Image 1 (cartoon, helix red, strand yellow):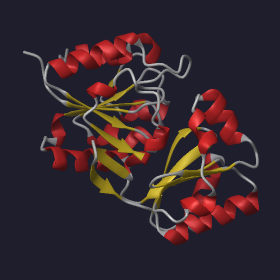
Image 2 (cartoon, helix red, strand yellow):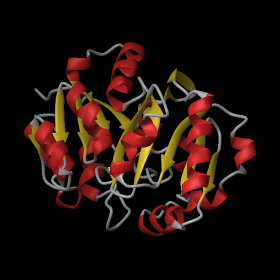
Image 3 (cartoon, rainbow, N blue to C red):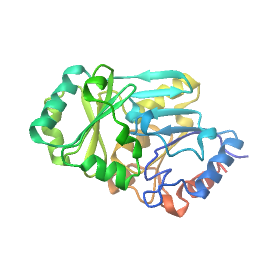
Image 4 (cartoon, rainbow, N blue to C red):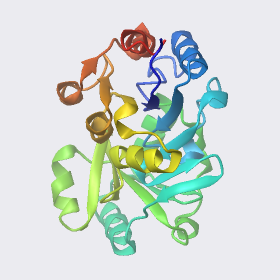
Length: 262
């Protein structure tokens, strides 16, 4: 008898290949079979909803979303949890980005604003990650009228502690060497799993989480089974219960077969 779990998947580098910007056919097959066998499928991403545009091939299989690293979780049109950043922390980071001259994405509850003096947002999100929607950003003053769910500043890892010391009750999750995602303390993918479990009525121990980056650590640790992709950073692999092959080498299919989900 096949095992049934609530399955949580990061997007970039886990579901979607960095090289092809597509979901591998083996992953689509695996998720289709897992759903047919009674498992549930959830997304757990650092992307805000407006930038989740590359899941068309599996959209019909998705039961719910953990977005902006856990700051906004929802099932269909129903909100599960929302934890915005404190306004003073948002303004601190915006002012710092202007003074230091680094790029910054400000994620509101409806729109995003992009401050890109260095061109890093365009270079990484538009060119490397194929996220064309960053070009449709709203003016900063419009976004600041909304709850701010996440800040994505483009600075090196060694600067994080310095800026976070001036942004109390914030946490940072880095999934790319050139930028990090800052959310309110208490908003991470692991806590998103707990919120989703409470809302959906499943046991958190009956969960499997897949990830490849630093911002996946909390859910890899929280899930009943935490799986690192073969292309994951070494720090995540050290925390994982199991390491599968890479996203481009049928990693999700192989892991779900290993754990008798398929």
